[in-house]
Image 1 (cartoon, protein in one colour):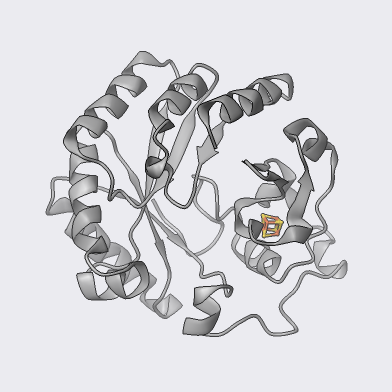
Image 2 (cartoon, rainbow, N blue to C red):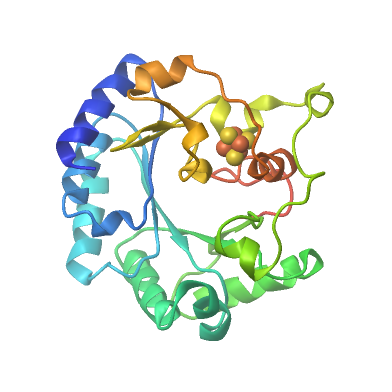
Length: 253
Ligand code: SF4
């Protein structure tokens, strides 16, 4: 999105009393206007950028730190790193991604940020605690002690469905399952995804035409979400997997 398009959405968000903003992609730092976009956003509320940290040369890390220092709101960086070795990470994120990401994280830490490292769980669930420890050791080695690490459950769609398996027919939300369930755990009950192409229920369903709710945020805020996709089952089981707060199960920070 251009800075002007984001500005229009921000104006809309003010009218809706939106409390916080997340930027995702693709890779948000490929957007040449991202710093201006963040400046506009940080005038209104806290912002989080979900990034692979591979496009963070030293001057950009410094400019981000300056933006954060100039705002009364927080600027968070959430960095996707899916393994503690080049082999495990790059198998999912492409050759060389591990080294470039670690450099980016080091720069962010050097600029005063405490990035939230997020990893999609690609190991057996029972190994999560030991993998978390390995993440913290790894990050400690580049000067990031007591690192904030969040483990995300795998969404069995797209490349992950090919790598492991897709959802089976029992993995969907039924009406019965929602009795007594705290719906506020689901991101789509309190957030929307704004894109150049319209407003969607959530970032997970960006590629699902059925999840496009409206052209503007105001309209989309009035529309309810059906929870009919299998990916909704993962949210149901795991809680708020897209926000910065730790998920209900299997996560840590
Ligand atoms: S995947 Fe479904 S349950 Fe999860 S946030 Fe999106 S619409 Fe809501």
